[in-house]
Image (cartoon, rainbow, N blue to C red):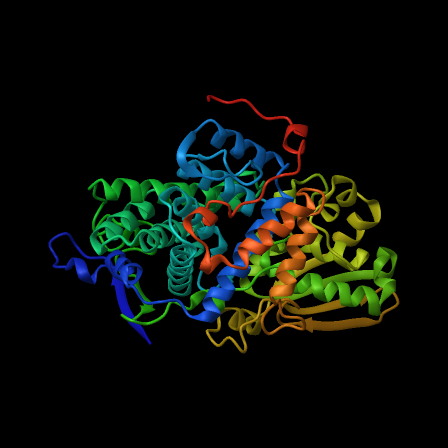
Length: 505
């Protein structure tokens, strides 16, 4: 059961009671003491394991090293753990959230939810976990906080498009993480309300971070939102207030960033006493690439096996991917970004280029989070030649399915039409990725554990892999001391093997 709230701009002289403001409604959901369901507990555990997987694989990557070095300059007791560092080496929670958030996001390899907006709701976990460790909260508290973070972000993503107005998707993450921390700490409605407003106010930014020459800030943006959420909660707990009404004000977010004074949004949130189940609507990635590329990678792997002649560009005249508006205009040829066909482009740019991703998966019959992005792989002559035959077009039916609220028909794939040099045509299609809940091989706990073992191999010692998994699978039962051990420690010498950049502190 849900409650709907019509959200629009109000003039300053109009009466808008606080309890009718979206930020206040979010706060009431966060403060609702409803228990989590067994299914949600299980999925929270899956996502904690998933986050640790991709964090482990990114520990020596430059943006992660940089963020971790900043956190290392802010030791604190009791504090919070930082991925890679010993559990007893605690840092200030907002900086731990920052470092861990970058580690989780760097490879673009954790969970996703797509609707009116895009999101990686697993980005809620680093700030909520950091505060749980610092504040001495139990595993049950942690699970409840994470369930709220997912609920609020996914509910906002279903209702309010940010990309339509070129606002980055982390504008939904600041409020959701603040709400999740509020649930974790058992804060009152008023305090959470102020924290949600502050977190939103400081996390609105343009989508240029995901356009053109995509920089390392793509990995930092959600971590920044999480850090701001921690700081917003801290300020609100001290009695500091936020701009109000933050969404509906005459100079608020809707009026100036999300469509103007005439725009009205229908936001559905759980009714009082209703369990927070939105995490069950999200889905993780089997491949390290933009989520809209997941199904296309799976289709390309299938075509590689069935039509080996497609590997050679001499056999191919053109490849057209008929797909959704988003896939065409954001990661496809419709973006108009020449970088999407540039063999010298950054990894961040290549993982937002469906022409590149489809080409490499088609030629290799597989996808690897490192090898598939190597400069030498992108620059291979036969790859560049085949790559330049791949274009995308928007298909109205795939756009409709992309935006459908019916989970049975919601889709993120499309139809490929390939013209061969001998005049033959190959046509195939895929709706959802193999790992999707409705896909050919939906991810289960064993798949999350396999993903963790695979990505942690060579990064963590075997004993550390087993220690973390044993702890993570008991998350809901953990004591406060055990929650402080819910981290991953790099094998000896690994972190010292990479150069640490120098900054102000």
